[in-house]
Image: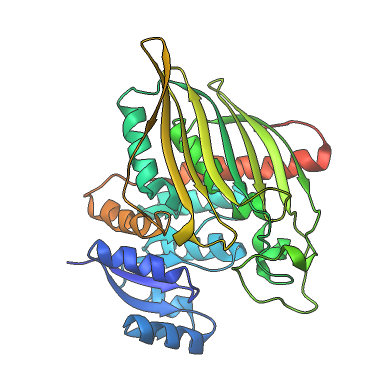
Length: 358
């Protein structure tokens, strides 16, 4: 029988989740949101039969799994509630707003015997899939170092809303744009972090000239108390190292989303460069390997199909396939924990001015 899924949260990201679940053969049968009218309107557009204003009521139904698409503060509580109710969980990024919360989620997963995955959608991009083939085929060797970047020039997602309220979001671009940090660690073999040094900056965070083309409406009188940019360095127990840059508002030429790495046998790059319109459809994607052949430096372009949604649909589909046992899960909760440990350490290092051991 088909997996029955309920969606918590009627935001725009739900469209990708639903498309992915249906692509993998699941039935999306329910939606829950505190804004019942918004949930009804969304459900009608997606032909979802059941709408709930109370998550507990939805969890009492015969659904098998849930996806969680709500402000970050509520990721862990809702995931734990769903796992305790015996449901598989697919949670939007970030996993939670702190590493200890992820540890609680893992405990709930272990007690339930159900699956807990996160929407690290860039792992599901065609570029990432092909790059992992090269890595797994031994063409890259050990990746000694990598550079992860998601840098925006004008990308603040609204002022005074939950994105810019630390109590609700957990932070600014460090926690919002964690995708390339995750992708770099994925390419590197998910090594365990050892030390982190980093700093955060709040330049431009209240300047509406730096507002992005996406996000949520400004909230007059709301809170804006998160960073606008962060830079840092991670060392791993394996000796591998990773530098990162994540920003909503920083003086860069254009928005860049990339992982560059240096392996023993080959280097590589997965990159998306945005134009002035900030539209995924007009962005330029690059996937390359850098090798030495017959004493010459040779760059190989890896051709892949276009994927404007940056793997979001395939990521959701993988969750269903993993439940059904027809595919290996693209991520697990322990990897989400390592990522959140690094994020916590970035903020701690920025506050103390010192490296932080994990």
